[in-house]
Length: 511
Image 1 (cartoon, one colour):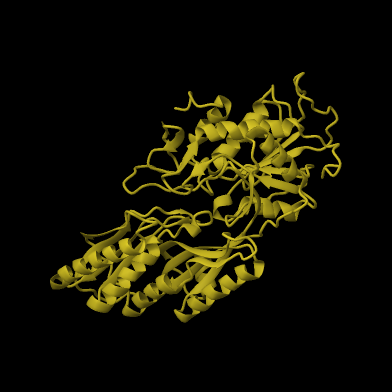
Image 2 (spheres, one colour):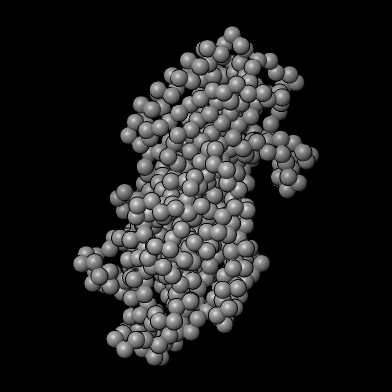
């Protein structure tokens, strides 16, 4: 599908890995692909129990017209992650655990039919593979580090053993705007609010599926400042009205699929007496008009629907129903604080990304101090902050709200912020090259999204890091698309940056 996209070598590897299922936690096949790739080329490689991969390549010679020092002592680390966010449109028949992505070219962009594209961070992986395979690109020794489970809490990078790495300069290829160099990022933690469920003995009334659809969604870090609606929050508002006015029963609830993606869709099965249906339909229509007015700038397609369904489970008890609604309305969501030092930068946020009904696992039952097999509603959140004390204060807020409704909070995937380095040599060098190529300086920016650079800063003392990448629009949604022309420009920039890498310059962190 991408045979006419240039650079052909980069897009060729991107298409290869797009054939391999690689959702977070399902990276073995793509990790094995990279290991086979390295062995076929005689490159040193290692793979750990989480399927993180490290591949090393010696420095290359340079063409006659490119000056590259022969004595390059320390390598440059090229870093990205193997996993992708798996989101699909309602009605799209795609199994992310087994099916290849269906790529297509639309104008100047690469997309996937009905699903996320995985350019975050597949295009970074493809560039790393193209560097490893190339025989005509001048570069210093390379250490390519490809991690796993980045999208679900950076567990791969957290557990990575870096003792085999010698490099002190790291280029992270996981940014999504070509003209922006990322120089610091927020830290974060995932939090699951767990609410035990009780059900009524019986339930009267006809069941209806209430759906919230048509939202844009987006990356819960990069897009949290765009005032996009959260489908779970909107559903909670409708449930509040239906319970108050019609005593509507709540039988089931689900919304979103990834804690780090702003949820685009949510659904509840509710029940009302047959004679109250018209009042329910009028209420839903009223909420749709209200939401479209509130979000008239940021969301144009908010849609609420009712569909008659059969659902045999009795409804939640009135107490559980009230607690579910309270959680949807009271758990912090969206921007909580802005950074006053850097105008326009979000400092702290939370995203109620996933709501689902689950049965106890033994671990959860033990954590809750109860017998196994109980039912509960889980609200999975992505907490982000560039200020460590604010990150933990956000967790305190979640725990306080959870305590009021008899719920508990479990945390996972805690990762540190990456602090800005005003004396970064690699940033200064990349700035100079960008200006030479483009005639204007790049934008240096801290981002509210999380990058693995914070973990590498903790693991490798004195490491100097920079993150950049091509234009990727609407990451973490089925509208995700990758600019072909931007990919070509970033590829040329990366090659020139490596070709000009000189460890003998004064102040270079490799000295």
